[in-house]
Length: 301
Image (tube, rainbow, N blue to C red; front, side):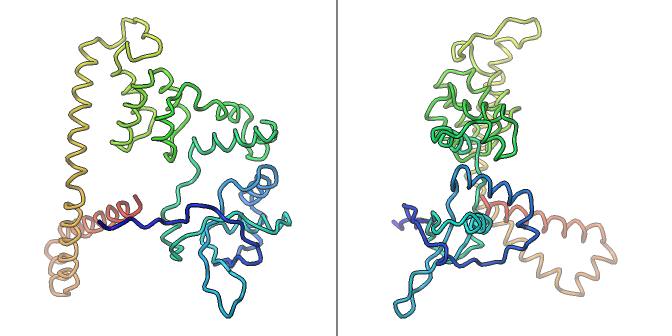
């Protein structure tokens, strides 16, 4: 069996800043931007949260090891301005910066929660963290307690997902086993919105909740809940079938798109369609663009 190649080394390393080679220049307008100032203040107060991504350059005649910077140009400039001599880096096994940047996932709610806890553990007041991140202090307190009442298995499942705080608020209403089921359903459907978790909550049996639902005249009946559960199970089954055949379907579409593209490059065919079947020509162009967009989305995922 072919082994999967790791994208980064398992451990971070500390690299002298003078040995890190940027791949682009950071303009003075960027250094004056609000984003850069926020990064500068964050590093000054909290240190590096997200290491720089680098790739080792080949040594020449025993020279010192240099590293090509793939991601983290603003962080590098901030470290220079603060007078740091070294930077914490993740070493990439591939020097293709575009590939890495395409796979970047910005900090998730759970990662932000862990960053805030680490800062508070170091003795940084919540008010100072809020000032550095340019947010309301109430948000810091909310993020600090984000995972209270959340099962550890759910935290592990959702740690890299971009999820709003309200989703965790709904999850807290469920018992641990139901939380895990809900997280797995969100992952299967690739939906992490409040409306989706609200639907799961409504379909949850009373014995799976931390507190039983209050009876209201407008509340759904047990029959409605059973019907919703059947619909959700059917939806999940249909989703799995589509997921299993998605790769093959996309391959067929890409091949068909290539064939149609070659036809459309034929001036005689293209002119004929534009003169006599203008709507068809526009529809074909629209379909080919949609296939191209879907293919790019699959690559990003």
